[in-house]
Structure formats: structure tokens, C-alpha cells
Length: 176
Image (cartoon, rainbow, N blue to C red; front, side):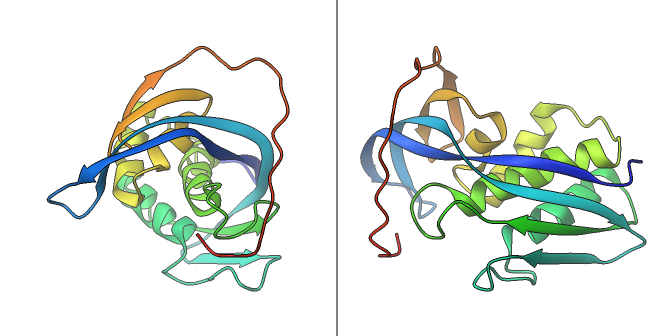
């Protein structure tokens, strides 16, 4: 087990989105092209004896069980059958409720980071199954890159990376 681990959680954008209808499970059936971008949150993981502690430099980010990182940590510990704890420090650069997947990428980074921190070697496919339980776009956020995304967000078809370019993001401070 490592003493500390720092992970970058890259934001994602929807370059294309088609909402095809509502599903019986309450989600929307979508087709989208999602792309990771260089804007990222930074997460620092430190092992603890038993509790899960969430801290953020942004006071608007919840620190309890409603936080996606907390939920991801609980799922990870259950899957790995580990009776430990973790302190997760979230340094936010991705604006909250901006549609850039800030909570989802942090949850995905938590699954990936804890797998490394606790050296459990859970396969990516199994981490993806946990990601699906956390949210529709968390599986993409775990994988990153560029993908055609279908279903409620769980069906990923890798696409060639998009060449370097610029993307301008405006934050009108209207929650999405």
C-alpha cells in the first residue's frame, strides 16, 4: 500500500449529443461523442485505518455520503473486500454543475486511484461495472479519451483521438 497518491481527473465534453428518448429506468437513451480535455481536478488519496473522509478546497462540494467520491470509495472497499479507510482531497478546477462531468470524473478517478493506492489490481472491466453504478457518464470518465457513447452512457465505442485543437468554454454560472 502506498502512503499517498495524486491523480488528475480530466473533464469531459460532449462534442455531439442526441437524446433519442426516455428509457423505462428513467434515464435518457443517448448517442454522444465524448472527449476528455486538459482541464482537470486534482485528487490526493491517503490511506486511513477505517473511515472515509472527503475534503475539498471548494466549500460547495459535499463532504458526506452524497459526494460521488465517497460513494466510489464505499463501492471500491466492498468490491476489494478491504476494511480500511481513505482521505480524499479534491482540488477543484472543473466548475461545478458546468456539464463537464466534474463529479463523474472525480468518482472515476477515485475508483482508479484507490485501485493503485491499495495495490488491489482490480481489472478495468470490473472497475467499469462499479462506475456504471455511480452514474451514466462515469464509465466514460474512467476510460477517457474519445468515444462514441450510446445507451444511457454505458456503451462505449473507442474513436481515434481528436488532433490538438482549441475549445473555448464559457461559464455563465447557470447550473446544468
